[in-house]
Structure formats: C-alpha cells, structure tokens
Image 1 (cartoon, one colour):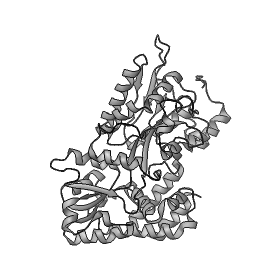
Image 2 (cartoon, one colour):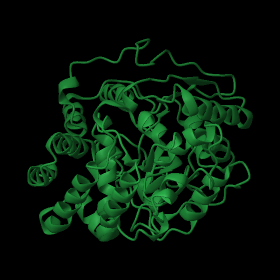
Image 3 (spheres, one colour):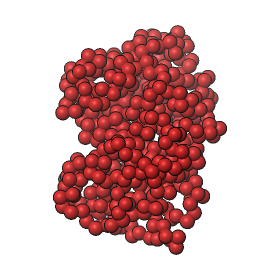
Length: 438
C-alpha cells in the first residue's frame, strides 16, 4: 500500500479518468486545504497518521448514527486522531463528485461513505482500491458473519475492497392498518405485484388514496419498478436485467412497466410536486392505504404520535418477494495511495465489527450486515427485518442505488425512469432501458 503523494503519470491518469467516466476533470487540481476536505497530514506520537473520513451524513438520523460510530471507534482506538470531512447535499452526489476529483489527483481520503457493488467498479477498473481480504476481512469473523449478498457487494472486482456498515431494505410495502381494513384488503394475501392493482382500487373505492407516492423525482419510481420486476418475475430475471440481458427478457420488462403504469392511476393527485416524506405523511394521517419505500420510511412512523407498529401501521414484503431481502447499503472502501494505511485498516476492521454495527444501525433505522449483532438495541420493526434478513434465500442488490449497475448505467437508468413518469409510455421506456447497457 503506497503512501506516495506524487502525481499520477499522464498515461495512468487518463486511464483512471476514462474508467471513472470523468475525463473532463483532468484539469482539476486537488491541492491541500481545499473545500473538498484535504488538509496537511498529521502524525501522532503513536505513529498513526490522521484518519480522514468523508461522508454525507450531515443531518437527521444519519448524523446521529455516524456520531455514534465515531464515538465507538474513539473508545476502541483513542490513540488514532480522526478528522471527519462531511460533504452535504445531492443525496450523496456532491460527495461522489469530490471523491472522483480526489482519486484522479491521487489524493484520496483515508476512506469515504460509498455504495458497494457495481458503484465501485470504476475505481476497481482504475486500480484505485486495495485488496483487504486478509488485512480487514480476515478479522472479527467477518467472512462468516456476513451473508452472501453483502459479501458479494464488497467484492465488485473479485477482491474485498470495502466494508458494508448497514443495510436498508427496499422490498417493503407499508400500509395503514385502519385504511386497508375498511377497504376489505388483506395485504398478506396479495401474492404478486400485478394483484396489488386491485387492492389499491379497493382502497380508492373506500375513499382513500390507493398508494402514496412522489414522482417529483424519478428515483422512487425506479426503485418501485425494480421491486415489481423482482416480485413478478423472480430474482433470476432481476439479475438478468442487471447483467444487460434486456431484450432476452423484453416481455417481463414491458409487463412490469405496464404494472407500474397501472399503479400510477391510484397515486395521490399531488405526487408530482411533493417529496417522499410528504407522501409518507398520507400513511401516518390515515389518508392512504399503501406506500412503497425503503425501510427508512419507518423512521417517520417511530416519531409519529399514536402510530404504533402492528397497530396503526404495518408492512409486508413487496408482493412476490417473500424470502428475498432487496438491499441498499453504505460501505467504507480502502483506496490505494492511502494517507493513513494503518489507521484505515483499524477503522475498517471496526466498521465490520459487532460493536460498530450495534451502535450505528439502531440510530440510522437500518439493520447490520452482520448476522450476529444482538437485537436488544433495535425496535420491534427492525428486529423483524433482522430476522427476515438472516433467513433470506437471496439478497438482491439495488438497481436504483447503484449496487447492481455502475454509475454510467445508473445515470441512463435514471433518465429512462424520468422519461417514464413524464408520459408512462411503456414502449419508449423499454427502448431506453435497452440503451442503458449499450
């Protein structure tokens, strides 16, 4: 692991820029003391360079969770100086732009918050991440404590290069119990996504919104469509799509786009002008029957008054996805040319430990990727999620959040979903999905 901060030779620099898909940044400099969080390196008397970590958890449950994480790390390694350089905004996009710039200038932080899986493939292809299979994953019984899905996401190029810290589940279908009962709908009896249309109609006929939704931005629809594909046609077809086998599965893709098109007639009328949190309030206020979202939606339920899990609200796996745990994760990679390799090794070992994950995840509203973290610090909803995860048959990685497809494909996928919600034209959207992998 080199600790040399010299410039990248031009040939390697252009290779890295091409792999990262950002050759236009080749003229940028990453000088010390800049707004991207770079500063002069310091060394303690114990010989540790300052651990410099960047993330986008700057508010809400994320800020509380990351504070708990670093409190635990400081207790475990008081001799290691830590400098957090958070980059807020853009749902992580601002941080990702900063990291690309720093990687290209051979000046990475010690580690940063990153989606694992395909999202990290450009860095792997540019040879900018270290193999930590032994130095990090060989400790804390990590390899035996993580299930296959998270371990695979930690190896986007075949070697372990990052450590997942948390898991957010995507295949949730939340509902207001009083609303669905009045509509005569049993959510647990809905066997596949196409059957949800009739359930939403029954809710609407009872005088409520069938499905609370936001379409102001396309990501919620991209996330929803992926669960419809997973539930209607199974994990094998879902994986085939992520591998670019679009035309071979044209019937499934067009059919699931049509299903989402059918859903949209039961959305709230203001779906195009509100956020997901505003849409979620329709469930809390008893104005809507169903809501599809990651398990972060339950954070709003926990803080709502007189809105208890199993009483006023509940959830089922998205129809057809029983036994599956569709994952979005955050992780911390180990970059080459690391400014603090010893401290970073200790930090990533800690991120992968029981202690770190039991401190971070209850506050974040996520579950740990380790299966041996005690459940007592978690509420009943997350305890049930932990059980579902531990017993899951497979853990499909998220399309919408970049675990299953790389950044360039994800950008094209987002454009396709934006086109879809503007017209709900199945044929045009399918053609764009074909081009995602071309």
